[in-house]
Amino acid sequence: SLIVIVNNDIQAARRNEGVVSLPARERVKLVRSLQCVDAAVEAIDEDESVAETLRLLHPDVFANGGGQKPTAREIDICAQLGIQMYDGLGIQVLSLTPYTQHYDWGKPRGESLIAALTGQQDADKHGPEESAKPFAEMWMGDHPSGPSSVQSPNGDKVMSLDKVPRATSLKDVLKRTPSVLGKHLSNQGQPQLPFLLKVLSIHKALSIQAHPDRERAARLHRDRPDVYKDPNHKPEIAIALTDDFQALCGFRAVSEIVEMLEHVPELAILVGEECVQGLKAAVDDDGKSESALRAAYTNMMHSPEEMVKGQCQSLHARASSPPWGTPQMVKAALELVCKLYAQYGDDIGIFSLFFMNHVHMAVGECLYMAQNVPHAYLSGDIVECMACSDNVVRGGLTPKFKDIEVLCEMLNYKGGPPAMVKPRLLEKGVQLYTDSDIEEFQVTHLHLDAGGRQRRLFSSEGPAMAFACKGTGAVTISGETQEIGPGKVFMLAAGVEPELRA
Picture 1 (cartoon, rainbow, N blue to C red):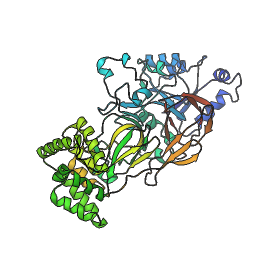
Picture 2 (cartoon, rainbow, N blue to C red):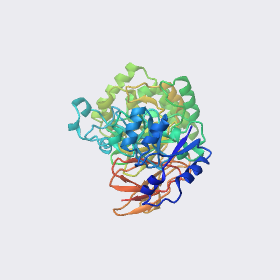
Picture 3 (cartoon, helix red, strand yellow):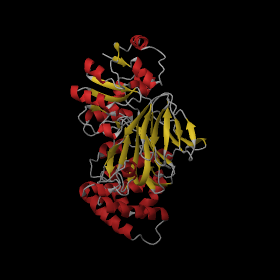
Picture 4 (tube, rainbow, N blue to C red):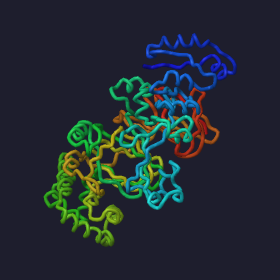
């Protein structure tokens, strides 16, 4: 049952500078008339709280609506009676604590943007083991592998009172108040965000990987839920935050791969003579290129372990001292071999770089990884947005499970330049990253000069997730203001039009 506690006239007068526009008894009648409400009662308290009313009702749950902050008396009563507390229900903006992932490819604490944004960069505050922990990803969303939590309106002081049972999971809040997701998403069986927003700090290369399409993702999750955590596909974009962002993405043109084969005999040995000839024959025949590329890459990826080890070591020796006359494209690939060999040793994934486009991106440039497209991030800091999934099919540069059979079967073997998303300038300081193939999300970059203000509707149909990367300011919605600074994360309900100021 939903019981609404309505402020009495004394409380209403305090909140509205002595003015009571509608008597409590009329407000109770009005609230009772709402179809979603089972009962409405007038508060018996004489102070700002509803503590004594809670003592009388003894509900299972006490939910604060909007920006209301629980008072000390309400916290004490809930602790005494074991009443579960929820913050932020019905609010138009939710202040969130992101989830930090400490994968081993992340940057050290003192160098990581993730650690800086989450206020954890000072190693002196931690022991040796904690200080050495890498900071790889900052997740902003409700995915079960790393859900954000909703901050109490009272801040950390209230959150630290563990004597009060509190529910702060974003996933739990969305389940109880699905209306913040908008009409379309809230009517689905399981209310959840359609996207996941991340920041990555990359110290060493991530795995050679791809994300399955919807049909394959559902099948993989059904058959191996321990490996493939959800049934969703995962198109994603990566926006460079630093000028040192490098990645491998998509297959090169067949002509480039043939040039690699001519100057890297170790690669030719693993690909096999028949497949090498097939690629050469496909250079001027587009009809043969995809099948030839599939055969060559699949054959290489299935090379015996001892053969891979021997050719890796031979390749590393060649890369350490490239022969005179080596073309620049091949020389650049050999330089990357040395870097990856130092990180992963005798790993079949090193040979993938000869097949894949190697991109260097400047701040603001955006890479698009569609479903079934192979890729691997190599270095730098990025913002990443994707459909809400954590499905990864890996094929190298990782100690984790490599699903070579699935990877080689699923990949898109169309060669050519990597897919990029060029931002569209909506107005000064506002850029939109979007692609017609992506239905789950779009990304807006907003820059305000000091003293600037802007009111903007980011999404009329669904919620918006936001974080501040640099600078300070505030966000105001319906008279409620929250200060923002680097690392501040907040979610806007569907259709909310905030005012932002720097």
